[in-house]
Image (cartoon, rainbow, N blue to C red; front, side, top):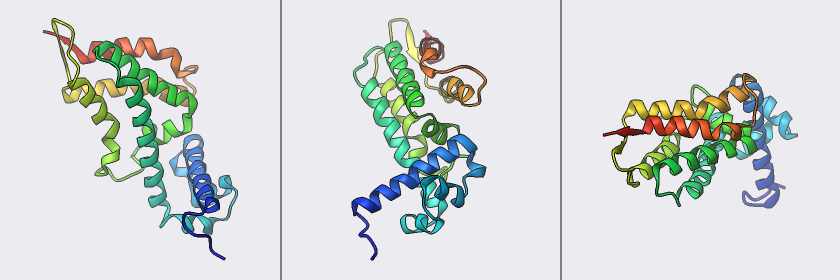
Length: 196
């Protein structure tokens, strides 16, 4: 007998498949995330995946969107209380690196997979960048400074932010990412705060 789509067993199986995809992509790369590898990691047969998702691409997109929203919520909570841009940048970096330290494969799936695992026109792809920019636009900079949100400066900030987790994930530098919060936040402030 087929389980209803909202049954606890069916929901747990779907979550197990999503967690398996995150782990396989985070540890073995997108090119090795076959339906077979995902199903094996989840402890079920390949056909089960198609009971929950139209295809592998639909699964990738759903996993991506759920992780992006989780990461955005984590960052929103940490950064919402900040009124100083330097403290905001520090909170943003700290929340990002805490997410990486707690869920490195999820972070890698969302932010280190290239090309993106979802179509580039999906709004979730830029959700975190838009949240960060929006928060910074609503903060008054210190006297004598302006907040620099040009495409180039914001791109440089994103590059700074992703550098340590990427290098930790590749084994180039030691973790945890939280060891790099202060340095990256200081560098980020130098990029995003421009003297007038």
